[in-house]
Length: 492
Image 1 (spheres, rainbow, N blue to C red):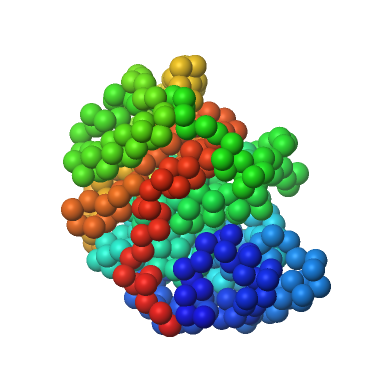
Image 2 (cartoon, rainbow, N blue to C red):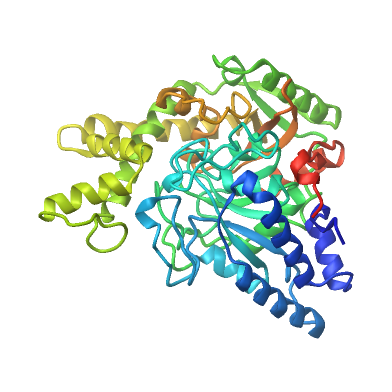
């Protein structure tokens, strides 16, 4: 079959179960597509073809014996921030270019236990710091909708592999929008779960109080299948919450759009730099939800101006602490022929880390230094609580909050945005991580250049089922999630 990559996850599982095709055939189909197409997209850092085929054969044996799980035999790609046993895990950095993980991240272990087949590890901004995937040591991944544009970041590789049909689903991580923004730029569905819903064990840390793993796929239903696999408490992760996990697939029609109260923050739609096409597509999607029975309620989120400065004090401070371990002594890149221990530290870190990572380490170290800790870091944490309270007050009157996922569509590769321009591009996503809330991106159309636009829906704590259900029903009434870039339409 030449069109296996056009199947939804549900169609794949049914095809495998009824022996219309085998997991080996499905896996080989994707490996052939990767070999033909990924040279142009540059989404994979490592393709694990031999291991993937072995996993596919094991999946086929389970399918034949009748002991397979729901997702047994379905291929998946992992962001290269999740440790994978026996496979290079680089976090997009020269610092970890030679790191072969001795263990699996919990997310990876859960996908293996479910019988999913790992195609490989995909590109990302270095240590998840960036919004374009251009800061990767391995070069920029390209947006399948237009190869001259970025796929977003930091989970740009995860978005690109799904958008180019080089994997049906992928894992991503979201520290300040790194699932939702690339999903928006690549016309996908991407869910950032409530903080603590998905284990962070084995996920290389950027900012520990903000990082959260989640699914990226074409549709809410496909995301729900992966969420059923990766969500849940993990004793190995001290920030994982011991709370019952919903059946996200079974609940896809559980939330009634009719009567749903959608909050429209007036501050979000008056942001300087909000592209006219993005605003128009988002407003059209809200009108569609209104036609389906939802009520739009104007709300105030008064802390909007504090999002960017608060995030860019807390996240770099945590990054500075987390990345201090990469010193050239214990593990990671080590410079050649150091003259003394100080030279070893300085050159290993300056040669091993890229410019954006070094910038954030410097900002964070400054914010945590004596004399500035109280003035900057502690104050930012207090403002963070006010941002959380701002959302909780809004949720007293609405069920979900709507916003663009990004103020623009995908930037051109090499646009050389200033750090300030890049950081302001995260205005709609950062607060969700500061508050620990769940949020989802849904594709809602295109701009004048045929680049995808995304709608973001933000939910109250533990409302992943609700968000997936709303987007699923929206997708039952629209076809934006079925649109494919020309490169994805190519047959092998």
